[in-house]
Length: 328
Image (cartoon, rainbow, N blue to C red; front, side):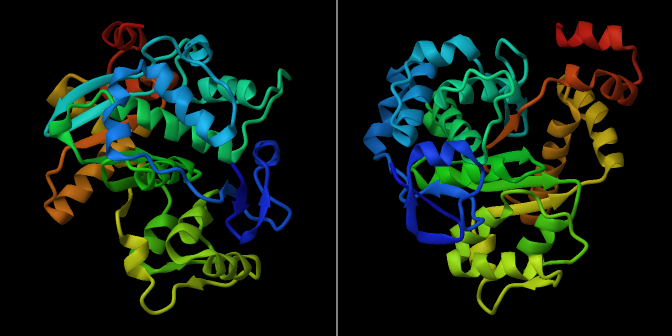
């Protein structure tokens, strides 16, 4: 598979080059020249494979590697995602159910295998991380009942790589509805809902992927140049609709997160970490504003144990008692 960047769709690079760094010589982020598209029949056949084989097959499409189910299972276990129904047409995909109890660490170890880099300080690059997330989504969706399709995807993110993984997976054929992403800063909300990125906004890494995917490479170059010059970026007439199509952004405060964690536990007996609570709060805002009731899949990267003190304080209980409830 050949790669281009978000700032130049003509110059191509090898997968090896795209695996070595986040950005190409032109400063753009690497992405495939053309994403593979799976037919409906190919997607319907995925449940016949093991979870780890599904992940390996998708990654092999991107990198030309010969990963096997065993390679993925080595780092993730046979069933690295646990699906938890929460009521109100919400499922939580606990993507941290691997040997490391941390999706980020699993990505790092699998990335090292893909890149054939045994160095202890191996750095996962932007595109490799996104590709692993795409592969995990194909693994997850093959286990969902067909009656629940399509599904909205809900997540919290800092660098915008996770929403773009969902975006690309939808383009590849997964039956995904809207992508609802929650942040604790207003940059993405300003872009999607107002069509601008302000000078004082903290711009998430990988946001330019969204602009390149929806508005084109040339517009992304204008976005990048405007930001580099320290000016406000504003979309041109007619560009807001493509940006909003299938993407919704929310902003939630820390106080809202703190209130959501005990509220969800009282309602559904489910313990959320702060990032998962941020995503869930965004889903509630989205549903309240749009009236949408489609089944939603919430992606959780981190166990509540990773923020055990903060979660215990929100729930007004001891850390020991919280660990008992979580089963850790």
